[in-house]
Length: 255
Image 1 (cartoon, helix red, strand yellow):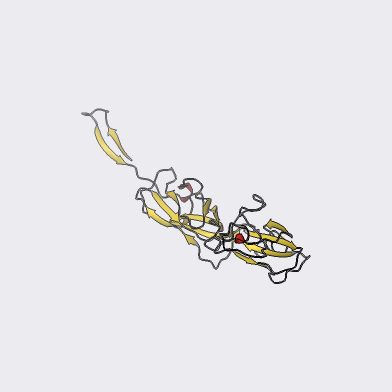
Image 2: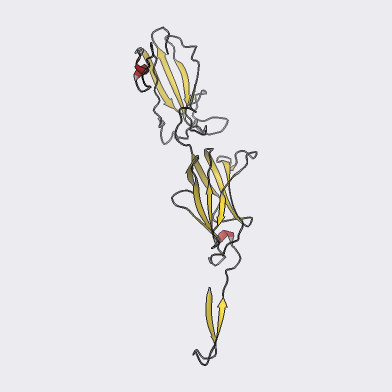
């Protein structure tokens, strides 16, 4: 800021007036700040452009004039191990725009869901309150990327057969729905054993054909082929996975 100071008596005739400019001090990364609308620092959705603002400050909370080198890196994070999930993966980065007033606009778009660690650095030094834990949720379910697996050709009358539906979004992410929050999941999973299949829309039973009524069906969420809720390979829940147990009472050829 600019200030005036006087030498001698404080009057326009007896005092000499000097102009003094007080410039901000060196950037203090620890005292610099980051702001975001909503929860963009901690939550976003796959494929959505998300933004936040970094403000470079000195140790006395004076805003710097601009010209800093600002970086924002997002690394897929293994929460139980508190470490990078896969060191071979290239970190996601934010696009940074210098607003020339000490503020820097950052925007990013991540298509892989999961937990990330967001680190912000100012001239190579981590700061602005980072690191932050960022949750990237899956996008809406996409039936074109969803698939079914199981022993379709080994169904025996009077015995339970188990198949699985893995729901995914348009980016191929498993639908990241926490079973401790939504024990039944959020997708409407239907199962029909059809004697005949019609040609109507999918919202009609057996597309307008004849359904086999003598079959027991149970659908449960987030249980894998091993019978557990968590995948031992990742330590995460079987996100987006629906287990269908069905028990046909009548032999026959079905769709």
